[in-house]
Image 1: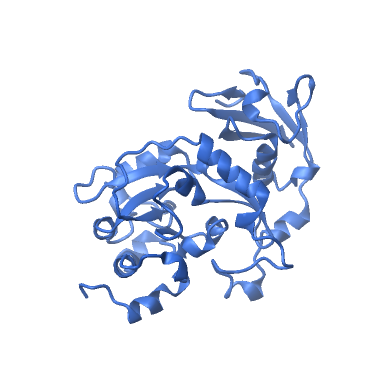
Image 2: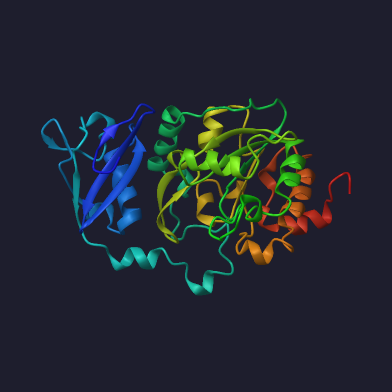
Length: 329
């Protein structure tokens, strides 16, 4: 809907923002705030939120405050938002992990300076609470009593979305269906991708996941369930807060949830629950030798016996598997 700003039926707002000769399409929840819009624009333009001047964005005849919800601004179809502001070199530098830290930075790194951990900062807790309240989850298959929860990324985790191939099966990570079939015995499975729901549904259909007879997917989450945070190591970035799921489904928690993703910063709000999977790229070269999912299936079977995942360090999953092989091995 380029060139328009309107509240859609599903409670989202589609904005076109003119900036520096570009037109940027931004899609957010109607209950997101002007501050969330600034964060989203910072991701796209590297203009710090404090440096942005937003024109034609008003509430009651005055410039809309950062606390104002986008759905309350009376945006009309055809309206355009303009932004003034210049990118800052500090943002580009903050988004690059120092070379000397690249080998040690993982899902357990700590913010420096004694700051409040990201997942406890009030502004991000408030964002998660809004997602819990307003994000609509379409449950495809109800969660089963007593099962653990496995949350999976798509791109480079299950699927090489950049390579060229004649069919989806050629880009699918090896042993995907065997992995999901094995995991489904002990885990309810959720797909969470930083793309739109339309593309998630299409990729799951393309991979033969959505209608597979041996396992079921509980639900999908898209980019609208993510939140934007500011991190010393990554700058302004989006992440996947598992607390959105935990808030909507009370039987799930950090004690019984694990998430696989190839991108570290997606774990910023729940580092202990994240396992960084090795990315699956160049499918035509690697499809005959990639066994990551087979090994991770064994790890999932092994830890499924635990009452609480809280003591696990998932970055050491291979070492744990050597010491604690699953029952059937």
